[in-house]
Every structure is written in structure tokens, then in C-alpha cells.
Length: 405
Ligand SMILES: Cc1cc2nc3c(=O)[nH]c(=O)nc-3n(C[C@H](O)[C@H](O)[C@H](O)COP(=O)(O)OP(=O)(O)OC[C@H]3O[C@@H](n4cnc5c(N)ncnc54)[C@H](O)[C@@H]3O)c2cc1C
Image (tube, rainbow, N blue to C red; front, side, top):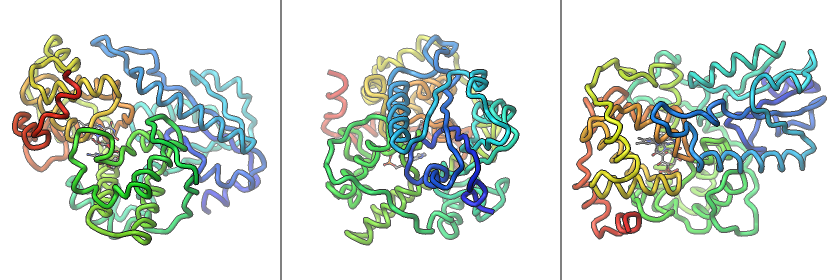
């Protein structure tokens, strides 16, 4: 039985996690078929905790994005007559006075902390249904057993691309008529506006493959990541819009490349499912021990953008100021911390976890492991020459000048 049939005429209590939207949502889309529905969102337990180095586990920019997203979700649900309660601790669940016949529905997540909180929440419910909707492809139609997930991206991509369920058409959410400026704020409406701007107004999707390695400005890549991480837009909705764009305008290597990058995202998500807690351990998923220093001053020079390497510093200042950094920047600063400064890669990953508004456990820790040489990279490790990279990707120095002035 599919979820829609299973929940028909039932009393549902939906736990929102990183599925903070009303479009393309298994439960909300069929709310009118339910006997009753109410929802809750549980604030992250890390909200007011600090890392051992003293920085907040969730930085201000990320907090703000999450709050905006939850506020918009609450408003959108209200318009549908659905109540969203925000709770700060799992013990507050008692106040919701759950009935025995209420079924908990929730998004399945695979980080170790996410699994732990899931176990706590499940203990308050007699019946529950988990939904697997964070990725493009889903576990049920994965063309291999989870433990056989290829460890190399290209093998994963080729298999998933051929058989993935995401190729089944879905209904596209409406694109609003009114053109809103692009604002990097949390919530479904901002995600859709960005997509409208990037695809349909500016046609930037047609040149994405040529521009995606940029650093300066906001238009060289899609910037969908913060909304994807919070689930303000689903990966399969973006996929469906790419197909729509290809049909209406053009299909070229750039339009394909955005799908290719969404598959990188899936790749790390499925690696996390496969390897679980190894993702967060110092020897990573391949068990390789790398020597590093726990030197705090050196770490802080990196985090504050005062290393003396202008490409690294500019990127770290951008991160601190905006909560975002390009993929090119992330690769360079991660490589620099691990391979030039020889600092603990997990400190770097934790800093990005704190600062990035698009933080996602699988993408962040998976990419860090990859660069540190304890992850999925078929090469022993990935060291970037930051001077050469600056010459290649910022030859005029405009990016560095913007952030170092
Ligand atoms: C050290 C390091 C840490 C990172 N941490 C995160 C993180 O916490 N959250 C996060 O979403 N991404 C992370 N990334 C991946 C990537 O840098 C960002 O997804 C991307 O820069 C976001 O910008 P965009 O949306 O404009 O990307 P685009 O180039 O427009 O790509 C579209 C989408 O594809 C996905 N994608 C692209 N590249 C990757 C990649 N290498 N790995 C996984 N997914 C990818 C993202 O969902 C992205 O939104 C990290 C990369 C590195 C090297």
C-alpha cells in the first residue's frame, strides 16, 4: 500500500524535519483526505550548544535561515487550516497530548544525531510511517542494495541515472506571476523565486556548466543548496523544472550538468546511509589515519580569514559574513586547512556546519572526508594549489578585492 492509501481517513500528526514545504509533500498534498492533521517541528538540540573550540554549533546566519523557513511554513500551513507547533525539546511532546489512534508521519533522515532523535520521538507513538523524500532517487527504487552502493561517484551516477525513480513525471508547483527579487532567505517562496529567476527569467541554466566554478556574485551557480538542505524545495521538483526548461527552451550540457550535481548530492546522501557514524570519525569511511595538529591559533587564523593566503582569506570572510561560499571556495579552503596547515579536518567540518546556511550532514562531512583523503575519492587525497587556483578562477583579483578590502 502506498502512503496516500495508508493514511486516508486517518488522524495524522506530521513531524516536519528537512521537508519544510507544502508543495510536493506526500502528507500535506493529501491533507484533505485525512480525518485530521496537525504538525510539529522540533528545534535542533544543538541550538544553544558550543563546539569544544567555543564557537556555536549552529551559527547566527544558519539560525536565521531556519527561523525564516519555519515561520513561512507555519504561515503556509495556516492558510490550509493546519496547525504547526514548534517544540524545543522532545519532552514537550507530552503537551501535544497525542491520541492513541494518531499516526506519526515524518521524513526519514540518516545522520547519527538525526537517527537518535528519531528513536526518542518514535517512543511516544504507537504507529508511525517514515517518508523517504530528501533525495532525487529513493531507497525503494534504488537500483542496488544499500550496502552495495558504489563507492565511486561515476559508478553510482551511471546506475542511478539509468534506473532512478525520479524520472517519473511529477506535477510542477505553480511559478508565481509576480517577479520578486532574489533574496537568500529561508522558505518555499524564496526558493521558487530563485528558481524562476535562475531558469526562466535569466536563462542562466543554459550556461551553468561554464559558470559553475565561479566565486564572485550570486549568479554563477544555482544557489539552491540552502533551500534543498531545509527541504524548502525538493530535488525532484528541481529535476522536473529542468525537464520543463529543456522542453520549452533548450537542452544542452549545462541543463544536464545541474542534474549531474544533484546526483552528487544523492551520492553523499547514500554514502551516509551506507556508512553511518563512520562519516563523522577522524579516519572516515576508508579508515585511513592521517596525521594532523590540533593547533587552535592556526585554526582560528583559518576560520577568521587571516592566514595570509588571500584566496583562502577572502573565502573565509565571505562565509563568516554571508553564511555561504562557492563550491570552488569550499574545496580550496578545506584543502588548505588539511594539507597546508595540517589541522584536524573535523574542526574545519564543524566550522562549516556552524556557519553554512546550507549545512547538510552528508554533503558537508562527505565532501570534507573526500578532500581530507579519508572518504570516497579514488585518489589518495585532493590538494589544491591555492595560488594557481586564484590565478585561474580570479585572475583579475575581483573576488579577493571584494572580501579583503
Ligand atoms: C568542504 C565542502 C563542504 C560542503 N558542505 C556542504 C553542505 O554542508 N551542504 C551542501 O548542500 N553542500 C555542501 N557542499 C557541496 C557544494 O559546495 C554546495 O552544494 C554548492 O556549492 C552549493 O551551491 P549551489 O547550490 O549554487 O550549487 P550548484 O552548483 O548550483 O549545484 C546544484 C546543487 O547540487 C548539489 N551539489 C553541488 N555540488 C555538490 C557537492 N560537491 N556535494 C554535494 N552536493 C552538491 C547541491 O545540492 C547544489 O545546491 C560542500 C562542498 C565542500 C567542498
